[in-house]
Each structure stands twice: as structure tokens, then as C-alpha cells.
Amino acid sequence: MSFLPNSDEDIRLMCHEIGVNAVEDLFVDIPSHVKNPDIQLPAPLSEQEALHSILQIASTNKQVCSLVGGGIYNHYVPAVVDHLSSRSEFYTAYTPYQPEVSQGTLAAIFEFQTYMCRLTGMDIANASMYDGATALAEAVLMAVRITKKNKVLCSAAVHPHYRQVLATYAWASDVSLEIVPYKDGTTDYNELSHIINDTVACVVVQSPNFFGVIEDIEKTAHIAHEHKALCIVTITEAMSLGLLKSPSECGADIACGEGQSFGNYPACGGPLLGILACKKEFMRTIPGRLIGKTVDEDGKECYVMTLQTREQHIRRERATSNICTNEGLCALRATIYLSLTGNRLGELARTNHAAASYCVEKLVDLGYERVFDKPFFNEFVIKMNNAKDIRNKLMDNGFALGIPLEEYYPELLDCLLITATEYITKDDIDTLVKLLQTI
Image 1 (cartoon, one colour):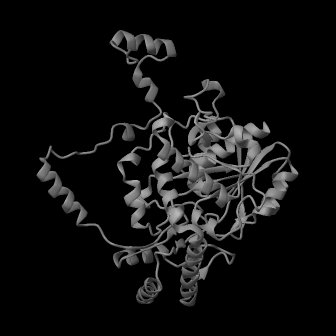
Image 2 (tube, helix red, strand yellow):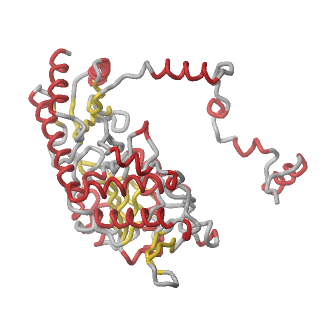
């Protein structure tokens, strides 16, 4: 049976039913320059010509030493992660509907959930989030369902892109979103205490936050719980979980964020790996599905999908989310990575912090100002006069230095968010310092 209209009359009847004159009326909100871009595609090429053209384009790429983070991080990925995750059994990221033929994939996702619970300290974790930003949005909708309140407070120190996605979800779900200002690099807790009331469903804070500063989650949780609101902690740099106290230890009710740092490449911005974990009592409000371990009729250990509270599995109006697949392949890579890293994750996290500490020390020695003198993990904010010009000159010399912050925070003119992971060596930083001395 076909679900597509078979004739112009079918289309006309469908348009009439939903109250529009033509199909084009459904797309009037899309700007014309986006809807009809002038792409200027070249004429068709043969396979040999296309390969030659691609190689020519690739030859113009530059190898750069990147000190850019801001939500996507360049960490070393062991070769075995690529090898195992590229086995043909794991090629698809599609939902394993038939458990009897998907035991390997289900087992891997179960282990991923286990790792996320251990790292966040939470009781339950799913494997259904696309990325950190939508994971945060889903966490907020969870809190709204749990508390039956629809006002949300979100720190201004949360990643700006995450806040944009959250604002879109809030608008579509009739949720009131208010931004709590930051002060000296962290959430303004005094202002938070002043504006929170018993109509608030949850308070959202990021730690380390977008400035790289470690937030006082315990204080945030205390303020939220005083007003029967939930505390949601989002994390963009999952590597920090190897060093810092877990969100659960600090009193958070829901932890969410981005897991790309575990075994997944920056890859020009994706694919990404969403994390969502919570306390056991919220299990039936978590979106997507959970992988559970059980036994078959012969008593043998096996894995199944359970609590599939999504719109494809239960009545649409009762679904907790419209998340329609999972990030199984990215979760698999994270699982392999974490199984290889084991207890050395803490050592790796300390290496990140050491690299960033050495970098900030050298930049301050050059006379640049560290904007927020607060504890940090592997990111920090430096003020440089004519920061954009300096950044462009460094790029010509093989260094990508940080993210200009004034686009997101106009008051932070000439400020760069700089990141140093274990990929950045002492020699890299010393070379950067020499270049800055000549500019």
C-alpha cells in the first residue's frame, strides 16, 4: 500500500483537508535564499575526473594545531576503535528491533548505558540522544513532565548553541524559559536565588561551563531543591567526568550532555553522541528506550529493548519524545574507547588539565589577561587586543587559536575561548608562544 498521493487531485484534497491552498504554502516560513539557493553546480564529471577534482580540493587543506573546543574536542582515538566499530555487524546505527539477531549491538549499548551511569553517578541512562543540545532539551522536557510545572531557569554560561536549541523546544512545548545571568565566569547564584520560585520546574547549569569554569553544582542543586525544582547538569566535555565529582555526587537530578570526546572524532562537527541519565525514580519519564539484561526461556543471558516510550512504539499522544532512532554506532565507539581506557580515564583527564594549565601560564607570562580566574578543566578565556587579527595570523602559521566570544557575549570583546587537550604537547605550546612573540 502506498502512502504517497497518486495524482494532482489527491494533493488538492490533502491541501484542502489541512486548510492550505497549495503544497508551497507549507514552506512560506523558509527564506527564499535558503529555499532556492544559487548553488552553481558544475557540469557532470566522469569518475576519473571527479576523483581528480576531489584530490585537487583536498590538496588545499592545511594541517593545523587546533586549540579550539567549545563543545567538540580533539582527543586521541586508538586505532582499535576504528577497527572494531567498522566491522560489518556494526555498520548500521539503526534501532535493533529484532533482539534475537541483534545481541551484539544490544550488549554494546547496554555497556554504554552502564559506563554513562558510572561516570555521571546516576541510576539510569538511555542510548537514544542525537547530541548534547537535544539531550539537554529532552532533559528539560523530562523535568516539566515530572514536576508538572512549565517554567525553566537556564544559566547564561550554558553553551549558546545548547540554549538556542532549548529555546526552540521550549517555544514549541509552551515552556517558559528564563536565562540566569553569569557573574565572574559562573552562574550568578545570588540572582538565581532571587528569581527562582515554586513555579520553576528545573534549573539548568553546565559544568565545566562554556567559559571552561567549574560551576558550584551543589549550590545550584540546593537552591533548586528549596523550591521543589530539579537540578539539571549538562556537560559538553565528557572527559571532565574522569576528574571532577560526578553530577550525582553534587546533588543533580538529571545529567545530560555530549559524549563525542569518547572515541569519536570532531569530524567537522559530527556525528555527535548525546548522553542522558537520571535517578531511578524518573525512569518512566526518560525518552527513547533502555536496553535491559534478562534471560531467555532456556535461562541464557540476553539483551532486549525495554521501556520504549517513543512515538513509534506507543500511542503518539503518550510518547515522551519523538526521538526516532539511536546513536548506536557512536555509542559503540564510546564503549570500545572507555573499555580500553578503563581506570586510566582519570589520568587522561589530568593530562588535559595539565596541558591547559601550562598553556594559560605561558599566555599570561606573555602579558595576556586571563579573564576568569576560577578553577577550570581544559578550557579558559584569554583577552587579547585585536584578537581576531592575531587569530588570523596564527592560522596562516598552522595554529587555530580558540573561539572568539564576542559573537555570543558582546561584552567579551577581544576574548578567546582556548582549549588544550592531550593532543596539545608542550612543544606545541612553546611554538605558539614564539609565534605570538613575533606577531
